[in-house]
Image (cartoon, rainbow, N blue to C red; front, side):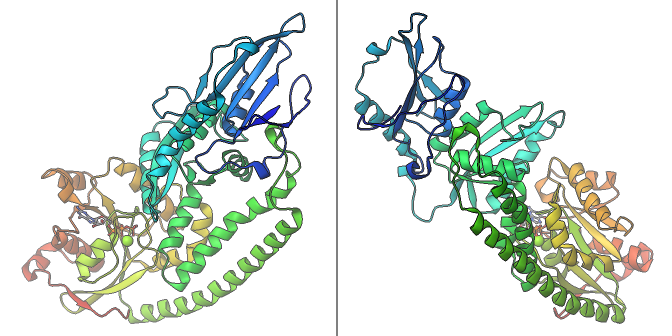
Length: 507
Ligand SMILES: Nc1nc2c(ncn2[C@@H]2O[C@H](COP(=O)(O)OP(=O)(O)OP(=O)(O)O)[C@@H](O)[C@H]2O)c(=O)[nH]1
Ligand SMILES: [Mg+2]
């Protein structure tokens, strides 16, 4: 039976020995941070306590309480086992169980009890102000043997979340032998997730691992919260930061391509959802329409991007005719690439302590002594496991790198997983066929390290240590550039002292 707050029986459901099918919850949706307003009282065929499935339903459906009444050998009711979600964030367990008693002795003021619990739950919600950032629970599930760098991964997910303007309110992590194909997380951690999201009044859940369309759908439905994965988060950041026409179109294209299989997948399994919850969501016809629209839009975007690409190509050709060497700044996101461009050219390109602050290539002219000019370009940052759709969409932007005679590969020297990041950048360069372009490793942000440490790391990697922010080490860097590009020996340059001049932005 499903019993509402007034004590009225709304549904009587007859199941079989193994399962009961609960009704469609569509119209009985709980508000955010609230319980459903329904308690489930059901019988078990033996004198058996609440099962794992009972507790999963309790959590996922956010029931007020669940009660199982066992049956004695005689056929009489045995004990009543009751449980509810823990309402205090200090609780050790997501679920609170009452001591089993014969059903007749399950005697307390339910109205009062549930009122207190809802109040405890509503407390975090009340402190929220209008215009406040969205709140997210982060989830990380590592599998098999690849748990080694889980902490770094989580730290990076936090940074990505912050860059998207979302506040992190909680973290759930799990190491599993194998990912659950339906929900990624195991049932127990899923309960934890529901309860933590409830406690922290979260608006969305962000998974560090990419979700299959099926997992995304299952989780969204069970949590009744927006569920996104790392790829979507990165796409969101890109969408927020895109400024040029090119950038906006590329991001939109990547987003649509990511969404398409998720739309297509949905209707195939509308009929039966796990846990006996009736199917809901938009009907097939609407999905058909959605899918067609998305495909049309994808085609249009691709056409438009092709046009823009032509313009870009002719600009590149023109530049080539000028015969100027091209220096491209590449590196992991937030390493300080734009800051370095600024420092070198004293220009005002956009710098921000956010991942993927730069999405568009910006080129400036850099003047070396003896009238030798170089084009220097700033590019979009890289990240490990760059989503494939995004790579494809940004291929056009990355094509600019084809022209580079030399890469300035900027590394944040203060990051603990520096080697991994260098490797991640090399992997992307390799994927776009540019592994052979010479590079100078630039260990930036040395001001954040104790004296001498940055330079020591740079020496070990045969790079140059700089602080783009404080304009330190730039002279040495430029000398290295000059020797590499013009094959001139350093002493000759020392005599001249490098005077860099900067010219307009119309490259
Ligand atoms: N302390 C210190 N901070 C720096 C230095 N260089 C850059 N930063 C800071 O690092 C943050 C990121 O700098 P950006 O230049 O935007 O980095 P980016 O590599 O262009 O980043 P994306 O475009 O987002 O990939 C900013 O807050 C900068 O002020 C440095 O030498 N020292
Ligand atoms: Mg930048």
